[in-house]
Length: 358
Image 1: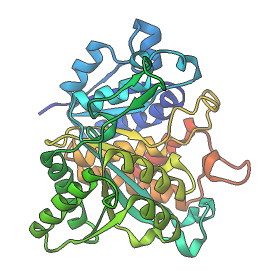
Image 2: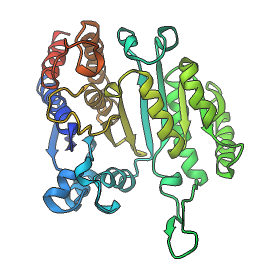
Image 3: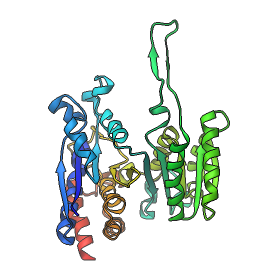
Image 4: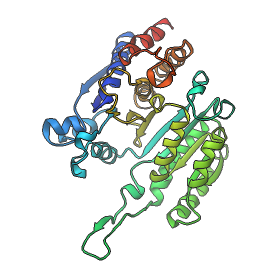
């Protein structure tokens, strides 16, 4: 059965890191005779410049019928003064909400050969391999009511953090099952000491834990979890959290690896259709210089093959090739301390050679 892949390069380095990723995908399609149809469309600032919307209707409709979406990055100073509805970033939130991509999986791992790039000492950071499962379509980012009141003295703004039982159960299910496939440890992060919604979150997840006796469940308050990620990140295996706390913790975890340019992410619905994107942004300051690290985007392709396209073996070949790429000493500018680095446009050929060698 033909699988549909939608490619959304976006803005800034999104376009640059997508090119080598599509080169690798094209190689895999030919090598393994994969029945994929690829379409590419504009999104974010590029789409706004073209048609006045960061997420045109035809893009959204194509996304809804796609099995996997490869998303680069959106945003830049050029569009900072637009209203929220027209800003490039709204494309990302709209896709997540309209496609019901409620589960965000963000791995944070470190190749020990790159431990010098981490801000933490080697003995703390070596062998880092954790997974953060973030609820993505609920919580304070989407809760109602919300608003800005400017006809009162003083003016004020407000947002609502809200989760229902079903929203918590479905993200917890993903987290527990992920822990079962890893090291059997799950830490749920909340603020149950001060927030009613977090108390409810903790009670629902604790009740669900009875269905997963092979998973060790612990709880941490969000502020302590942030501190522990820096002090002793290897104590964690899988972390599950709400939208807000997951947003913060996943960025902290990404920073520990020394370069956010190495880390992929997946946003999935109930049927494991999803959107795959690097954890980095559009980085307009380096766009056009051929120095962006495409590994996160290439790893996102690997996650797409694993979760949405049912090609676990090919996914593993990409992961192995990336690991070998690092072991052989190949470096992009962000993960080296000297000027001996390869360009963005040179990475695909190296990875393809390593896959083909297998």
